Every structure is written in structure tokens, then in C-alpha cells.
Image 1 (cartoon, rainbow, N blue to C red):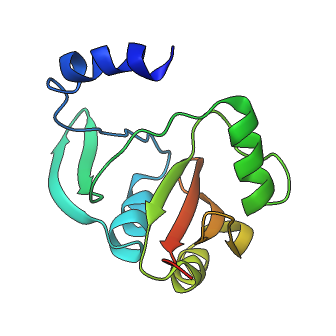
Image 2 (image 1 turned 180 degrees about the vertical axis):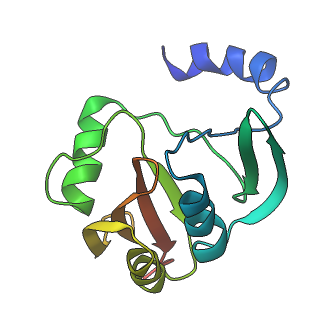
Length: 145
């Protein structure tokens, strides 16, 4: 599909989408809430609890859906990590200081896959494994040189 073909879908579909919600199912709910809400700092929008289970919805700023082909995904992994590591999904958070946030999340139990690395697109990106089996990219836009 080229740009002109995709443009005709833009007005029909995006007018109906109001929110992108990523749902992560975790074996340790309390640990995941502590990690994402208390350590990463996502604010709690709502939470529900019943005999059937618990769910919390956390605000994560503006959401986008990034679609990459295999070549681009491999290139991003090569730049950020040095080898192919991501699965089909990876969650990226733009943060003010990816170095400090990486250290904070590692202290809270995340596993660092790659320390913050300056990318060709001029951001400082780190890669971590987080609760719930989620692979995270933390990135800080460095701006123009």
C-alpha cells in the first residue's frame, strides 16, 4: 500500500479511534502496579476490583501505534541493543531522562537489556525487560545538534 492508498483510510478509521489501550496480563498484579505506577510514574486513571479479579488503567501520555517491517525492527534492535531481541511487540516510553529512568526501573526489578545508547535519529534509547514479560524502550529526544 502506498501513501496515496493509505491516505484514503486515514479519514475513515482514525475518526472512530479515541484511545489506544495496551492491556498487559501479569502473574504478579501488585508488583506490576508498583513498577508501572509507583516507579515509572504512570498516574492511575481508574481501578476496579471484584471477586473475578483486579484491573488498573494507568495514564501513559499520548499514544501512537508504530508499525515497522522486519528490516526496520532488526535495525532498531541492532542500534539499541546490538542484536535482534524484540518480539512482535515492544512498548516505548518517552521520558525526560532515559539514563536515570533506566537505573530507577532496574532497581525496581526490570532487567536491563541495553544501557542508554545514542541513536542515529538523535535520541537516547535504553531497552529493558519489565514485569509481565513486556520489553520496554525508554527514549529521550535529544533535539537538534
